[in-house]
Image (cartoon, rainbow, N blue to C red; front, side, top):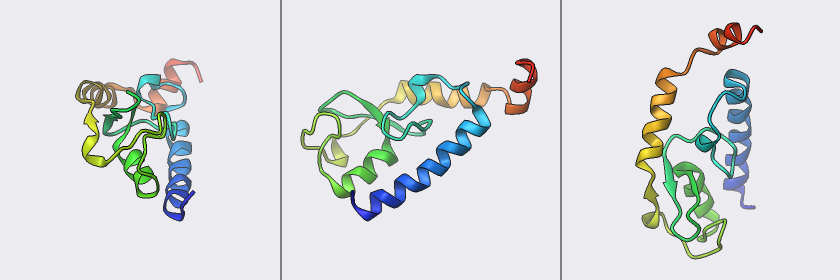
Length: 109
């Protein structure tokens, strides 16, 4: 793993911990980046494998390796296709999701 990807993964592990602490397991799994297991902000479809990942995640991957991490087919940033419908659903979920404290109260915690 290159140093850029290594530091990126470390920062995202911290982010993932924060997301889990705040939202727990209350986010839809389709919103989770399959590489870093974080809620996506800008989902894109990888043309070689059809997988959906967060744009920032795959851009960092492409700094070290010019292939789709799932199919190993050649991949460049210009080949990424926005997952507009999924991004819209993620944004709507973020706007309508209960605050973590309110969700805990509703769950009896």
